[in-house]
Length: 275
Image 1: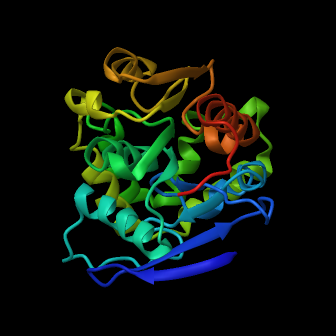
Image 2: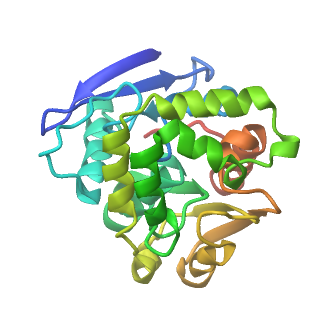
């Protein structure tokens, strides 16, 4: 339980949280949560209580985010390295396989794990996560972030992320503060990498059960960007949150957690079982 750290094979300290409120006389499956760009494990706070009652929940701060070490500028940043971080965390935990919940960029990593390391993924549930960020306007963010700063840029474009008429202003302010706590230069590198990537022609390799929840009012690219999963992934359930913009895990966390639990119960029964 609580906060933990481990060091990756290339020397980066990775922080993660372990939350387990399952019945102590049962063996619980593991559920790994991977957050978005500019995010952290803490942003999943509202989804954890219902999930941790059924699963051993592991929330990882991606390298360069949250409490994890910001890599030096001369250290290469690649999708393979981000995937390796998760694989090394799994080894650290002694966990042979897990269910994965990925939000936005965290969903990119979950997809890569399912496509290339399928033995690790019992299932993946992705939220607002297309097959890469290449076909979006995200590349236009980078010069603005560099000029205006991360918090100012996000504040100016916040309607792309939340339905402001239905969102607590306190949540918006907290979200901005959390994002701004990340290293701006590294976030620029991270988003820059994602804007070069598209693996639409590989998603058919996802063989585990997959839940894809997408915002019907998607503002990072288009809601049609998710159609490729429906067309190509062998075992996928698609769920649209009508009219909501991109940040669905922040805006409606209880709904998101409920859909994860419903999906996993439907496909696997309850959270008990060996990893």
